[in-house]
Image (cartoon, rainbow, N blue to C red; front, side, top):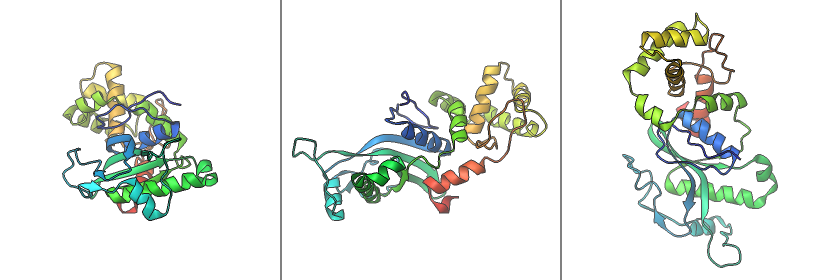
Amino acid sequence: MEPPQNPGRFNRRNHHFLSLLEFHTALVTAYLGSEELRECLPMWPYEHPHPNSDDGAPQRLAPEYVPGLLDIAAEAGIEHGTFIGTKIPYVGTIDLMHKLSSRSGLQYVGISCKPRDIIDRSERAQERLKLDERYCLAIGARHVVEDGRGLHPVVLKNLRWLCPLTSEIREYRSTTQLLEFSGYFDECADAMPLLDAALAAGARCGLNEREDVFLFLRLGIWTHLVDIDLSQTIRMTQPMHRGAENVLAPLRRRYLGEAHV
């Protein structure tokens, strides 16, 4: 199990993921552009306020109140379940609920993280996924089952290195200096090894410390200002491989849908 991590571009919460699959899924959706992430979002058994009613979103994607999971389960013909040894309905949860920017505005995406072998051998796991899907439908969210098979190991390795602190994103993401660095880097990147291009761009932007140069390089890649293919191993002594869309397009297709590719 991974230690608590906080990947994300604009996340306002600390996160404590319950599995490596959840952490990896959060990592790739953060790179895609997740503006908000909640893990273990409760699907309350009884009617309750829409879970995103207090998040400041400019437009409502679902009614003010949504049905409880008891009613959703009954409609689907699935036993809801209780806490062991009691008659109290248990509180189901969605593993990850993201708020992602898309071409049509903000989109909520509920993700059920479940390894494929568990899904295939457990009828109850399949029922739980159906309840997750129906709950997402009730709150106006897209639902995705993530079993981990499509998560590229090189992409994950690169993202773990690139993932910035929330404080770094807040301080630099909209600055002219980051835009200028990324532009200068782009001019040099085809003719120089990645390290030399980064140092040259840093010198033109007044970054005197290598630590600051590497920070701006990571931020430029993370915010999609640098066109680099993260499915390829990053080697600082070689020119970079262009093609950020080789990773971003499949992620959009997977989590936002075909219309957003």
